[in-house]
Length: 259
Ligand code: ADP
Image (cartoon, rainbow, N blue to C red):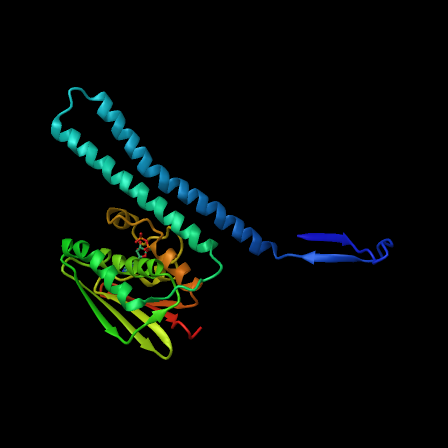
């Protein structure tokens, strides 16, 4: 884009020159394209469960007399689909809130304590897939971030480590203090991520296997939320994955007082 603007001298004398503003239109176009894509993804993701709920209501209305077992199944579908809608709305709101935040605030929390709480919350989910959960704490990792957000970060990573695991697999979480940084690692013995997908998993709504992600209650926004949180609190995230063997995610955050 090219704009010209007249220049005025202090006395208000007429222009003697011009200012040229050059903008990188490709970057702007790309941003605009990403925004459009995001809106269309959101619309699609919201419409799918809604369509299913409406279709089920229609069936309940049409079929008379309704067999009791069938009715129970229909209610189950609506229950599941509304849970999906709720999860999606919650994640979209969290993402918008984190993206909007520019300041990190004064609050501090213990990463180890939040990891331990996250594991407690996910224990029954892990048990339902016979996945074992373990935690090792080394040192006190106090970070400058609200406890709820740090817990959310750990929950999202451990939740994935359970979901994309095999029946009877294991998830190990470790919190340590290393070189003035707090380090969280979440390792699983799961399906792993094929090399061609690895560069895209932090994108919003990107899933390697849509069916599996949905079946497991995934919104496709979990890792995107993690990435935004890590970046807001000045940390780094990376992972190592071998297909068919497992994945290890590592998050490093500055220790409070070490920023
Ligand atoms: P979802 O809600 O689909 O789990 P995420 O943003 O949390 O969304 O993750 C994006 C995708 O990355 C998942 O759909 C899955 O394909 C892949 N993924 C994330 N974590 C793991 C993991 N620990 N092992 C294997 N694949 C994973």
